[in-house]
Length: 407
Image (cartoon, rainbow, N blue to C red; front, side, top):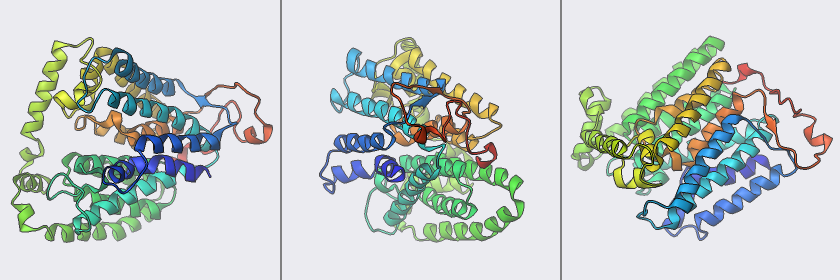
């Protein structure tokens, strides 16, 4: 039941299927209504269990509370999508983070299965929708020549796949599934032609190989020998089937030249550097208060998450965000690198993306990272729980899974 509830709640949003299906007339229920219904389903599964949290969880909640307060109460920026849009987006993220913190905190000590299944499905659905677009089954992408799946934006598709893969690799002990998902995701990310996505995928996979090789060198070597040729063959086959019309697109040609090592300077986009410069100029003009929620991702679009948050809410929002990242890095270091793959995924897209703070998958990765790097939790007990439910989760909250099980 917990696995089903988490999958129903998260996967339609981490793959962007529900928003895409609703906008294209394939799903009759508004995404906000679906989100509330799925959230209530998750709460029913864990109802009766005591909420447990760490100070890092509190930071996550405070960050989103600040966003909701600025969007609803102060309302300094007129969002192009309407006055209610920031409230709906950030209110939904706030409620989701609270639900996920409670839900994952309860189920994680009993079983890793719900989180693993949800993350694996995100990788598979995202990857397969990319491949389906590449073979002409359906046109999703807003950019010709680049696969994007249900996300429509190729860069967002790559981010979603890498984040979900990081969560799965951090929890899974099954080498076969891990390498299968790495191979599938690598091909799917490659055909997005996302420079940042391919870099992140490479760093994540190499980090996993290094960690796993130290534990099981023979098995990792065997898996690499089997997987690597298949991945290379898949990428070469898909590249060879690009149409001449696509190859005439200058952006696609530049990306291919950069990714194949023909011109490293093309790894940097001149247009994005100009956007970043404009965003930094906006920060210098209003460093303390910012311009209001939504300004960073619509008016300036600096393609940098920290700069976007600073434009939205000034030094207070930026400080909360940096404090969260510092707390996550500290917890990971204290835990001897446990959760390091999730930390890599959380940090690596910051210099390239401006929409991470509105993406549920990003906060799922953070919540999971908090859980697997924490040994002690604060407990909120406002009712008397039954001994049968709590006998496997004492208030000291010592993890039932040894640290060596996590990457």
